[in-house]
Image (cartoon, rainbow over all chains, first blue to last red; front, top):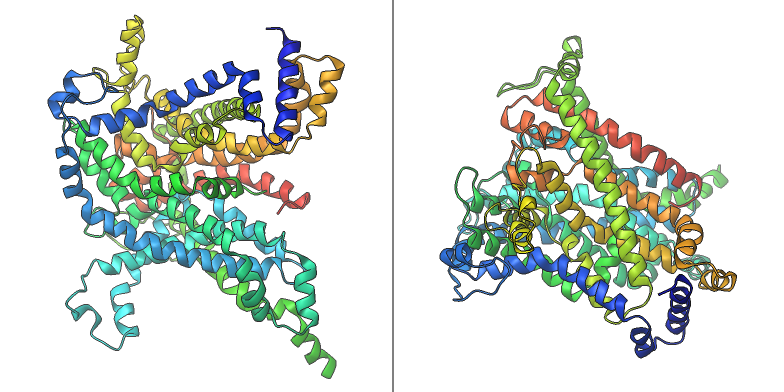
Length: 317
Length: 300
């Protein structure tokens, strides 16, 4: 195939993209492209596909069969075993990821509004510190975060702000205090990226609309509540998805706050299924990996386009 | 006087403080406060179970002297740079390739794009477990494949000291190339179609069109993707920890793993803090100029 004809194909493809996506023309033009992208996609799926297949095999099964082939005898035992190890930490992860997601997104929205849709100089300068905050290596805050939670006794703080005997309540457990530490830590470190996502959205809100509200004498709070917030639904969803995924998936910050104790998140406990020095049982390990991945996989499969928007917003413009 | 109170009441700077000041204080204390605190700790002798003393007269640069004469530190620095550079370049190249293919307009575009980005939505702990299994020397997919196609000499022990850094990089490129693709795809879609047409009329071939016309216009995409990837490469802790725990061995030890090991396994808190400062300085050398140029061109 000569270079020139390829180019003609290219431009005709682009033209046809313009002309309301005539799919039959696209495929008719470039079958090799579909084969190529499809092959690459298959290669990308190999580690995941192998993991699924292995998770349904017995130990004998995965030792004696090709790793990527379906199991000869399907077993759920690896899932059962992985769930026994991970169920507690699965709920721990949910218990801090959901509140931290909602809190950081809400605070990010308020911060972005104050730094974007109000009229004063120097907003960008303050915003630079938020952006820089998204890039900073977590390592450079680890020891202080550990020190902070060693000094602040969150159990007592929570007790002193509640009128009841909080930790005496029958359903309360001591490690819930660590969950609160995780919520606060992830919220604080999640605010910069949430602010960044909201700001790039709020920048594009119509100035005339906000100006009209101002002339009508609306206060900043009323503009936020009545105009900005109702328009923010799409970016709230994008931010929720981004924050949930990154907080759920993260290891390091949760590891140093909760450790491997009763409040351990699932990303910490998954490592228990492949302890160093022991021969790993790959079927259980793969089942555990999928149990860890299920919440974010569901979100990705159902809200993939919104996940992409969050990802594309990360790293500035 | 009246006009002054009036002006204060009208000032949006003041009236907007309830919105941005509390979040700014949280970020200021949590991030910038912690970074400063970390620097202070690196001046102390904080180790073991004793508490740090913040007495300025006892502050010294002992940890940094120790750091600069520590061969482990220089080795970790070398590995950090290898990982950062090779990982970033491979991700950008793969991402660009994927974006160009997808941008040509294919059937099932959404499905295929979703698959390329799928690894990016997973936790590093999860993908590390996948690769641990992929790289199994006896029955893992990689070696089974090479043996199957008659390339037995390529069936190596991928997580052996000699190869592990490269194996880690391949796993990370698999996970991050989708991110680079998303950034490039946005860049490609912003280029007007007319430019392809004009090149077509001039009779330029596809390769020339891409090298001369398209790729130079992707500079902004390249820079912003590269900064994110480089900063990630610097702190690729989660993936390595999930493979090797705190001791990846000298061939895969990076500053991020060394810092964690010193602070949290050996309780050499002050020393860990000093390593963290070194890591922070490297990150700052990359994000500083980037943020400055973004600020200058009004991109923030």
